[in-house]
Length: 224
Length: 386
Image (cartoon, rainbow over all chains, first blue to last red; front, side, top):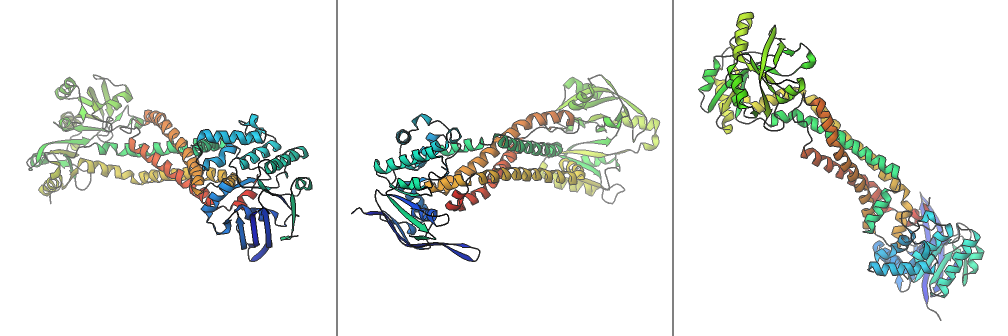
């Protein structure tokens, strides 16, 4: 049996708005094995992104534990969490979130600046990551000079470049046309199958979800 | 290194906005520099006065005479080396108020007390030989195109009539700030003419005495001794260092100077608001980028470096441009103001103050954006996608 890389143990999350407590996730129990490609689906407001944020350590649960690998990440301090994210997590966002003043190469290099790699090693890593996503000829292009699909591929290269344990993708095809979305999903599938990356993807798109090994549905903060 | 690269890229992201901000900062620095230079120049004349010269005047007011007979008594006070005197004349050149400049009559030995005036020796001798000769400062001579030997006519405003002189010497200041805008002529010429034309105005009195003392440390003691000599007389005296005497005159403009100082600091406030606005706009636009950096594992120190660096870079560019522009602007202004101020030029303290204020403004303008960026919850920042 493949060990679980991500474990959510009775995780609940609620937000306070003025004097109101708004529950978003309720008693979530989830195990994601290493090497899994999981699609989290559900209607808007069901708590998919919140769940992804908790796994990413950019939000904290109101109750329960989030364990990634052997680390209970909800016990980590902010600075420890930041270090942990830089080492173990790769992010892919719906709107790519590239730095507009940096080239594709520099955007991909960004997470490596927090490592102890030499400049030469960083360059090798970046070139490898960009060649995996098929953009080695666009290294010097700025985001505004790329199509949406290319921007998302740069973002995937950035997520990949540190060789993270876990890639978290939040609606990675949500802002793309059909063809670009297909390319991105093929790429994510390759990362999972060829590079053995564990991927958790939030999506509305059934076609995108088809590429995942497992699909789970959230509704009103509960896994169904 | 990447932080520097990112700062420079961020600065050029909105070129027009950055350029306008830098120009705004530069303009404010120039205005600050001009006002500071104006204030410094106003006091420059007093700053260069030596501490070993005292001025004795009528205790009631400078407009009242001090008897000429006091000279011998003052000379006998221990510590006094030499004494001369002067009297305000107040004549107008070509009888035009626009041609105003300080002019006064001076007693024997007066110019020898002013070591900060540099004369050609032969010109000095000529002044001492000719009774109707006059001396003018270099700036004043330049203003009216006078050369040694030129006749000069002043129309008396206090002492009636047309007064004719021959310019026999032109002096230069030994250092910037020394007054070069005055005209002096001989007491004997003045006194003789008064006795001939308006004897009722010849009062055997002078406007003030200039007293050279051996030891500047003794100035308070000697001043007290001089004034004690004439206590309970019809013309009691007030003696003080020439610097205090001059500052007393300048103090008449204190309210205006204070106003100018306040304006110079308000300008710093304006710089601050300009930069705060720019930095706040930039930070607001980059919320999602700050959130991304935090998501990727960059800590508060990186965000502080980015925002502070950008703010400082804009401030420093603006400050340096302002300082560079300050020189030609003040140079041009000095062409118009040299008749009123000696040493109207930028000094090191003004540059230092301007740069210090610019750096403070750079730091201050970054504080709020830094606070916002560091406190920003990642999920909130990531939602903010433009």
